[in-house]
Length: 548
Image 1 (tube, one colour):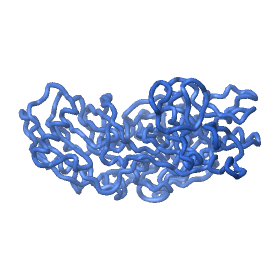
Image 2: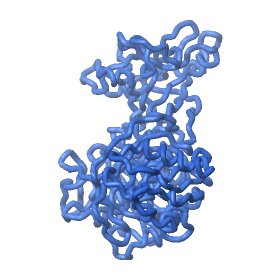
Image 3: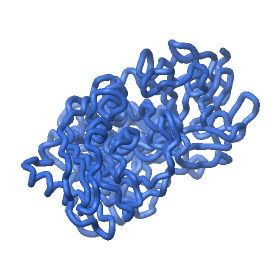
Image 4: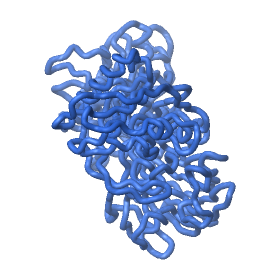
């Protein structure tokens, strides 16, 4: 996996604060819905597969040192906590072992990694690459901080940010929090490594390449938070004692129903059968006196207490879904933990699209937005600082206006529903065949951007019942492009590749059009599309793609 800000494998076992979001409007697949409030919170999911993960030991080489014909490998020593760069081949003997040059990245589930040395691990010594509060020095030391002003956990936390050229920047969290130079770097006159500014000043003493480290040292897949197999939800149809209970049959069908539409059938289809949601239903649950305010924690507590009074333990389930009788004090229609294991419905439990949206938050998907008004000619759209951002405009993403349309490809990969071999990072210019989402071939191409995000390329065709597009719909006759940032969660930004119109219903990159991304220093052209996929030409390190 690429262990950088956009690609850090997450374990997600933290409890964090409830966050209120703005009102958004979501359109269903078949009819317009009124604007509604939708709020999300972050919490702990029962199905988070929490834990840390290492990718195995490898060498960590520096670009500047390689270009200069010097020893490139970050290394440790037998009798000191120092780290330097030096020869990648050990000389042997007790003072110079190969393991002194071997490192592994260990995901911490919060968007950061520990960088651990094999020699130090084998010797039972502190093995984590770390920084300090009073200097730019780096050493290896204990992975567990002692606390206090001189020893923070963040001194051991690193983020590897892909530069799209085979190298990453290694950025330290402590230094970033302290607004100091964060990047691990080398120098031209010594074997020293320190942390310093990520932007080179130029000249013979300060090159960008001094901050660049082999990205292969961090490669073994993509950021993900797998949620697969059989999961069980407790669904509760509740009401206040001054309200008439909702129709429980409609709520049950919208969540656990086996037919269309339901959250269960939606998840079965979008996951390719990798996830099945079953469970139990409790009906006519009286939550007591309607509260004057809207305290979601209190509502969940009341629901849990009511379930236990019925002899049902919510903790025996992976998810808790609670449909309330409508409460005007709650300025949302749906509320969910992100990522997490609970959803509250404000009297709209019969709407399947609400459950697909909120369950997306449970899976770790944030609200999406759209990049619009980019400079454009008749055949080329430019992604640059002239573009603007707005929200809720992606007609193919239920997290931002897409109703019940199936989750985008990067969400599916993040949830563990697409094999890693079908998600390809483009590293060289050439011809590329993109398959049909959920049907055949390569499911996604990704192009690294220097800010740690990546371009995601996706191609859809009509796949009823949830993606029941008309054959002439622009959404299934071009390549959908998004800017994706992922780590502990995933954020999508649809690229409106047809900015001359006022709608995003024609946002995909159409046949014969080219998209140029200045941050990625890359370009994508669509040569043709059909029922088998899209024929693309992609340029890496250039803004001119190969000819069709």
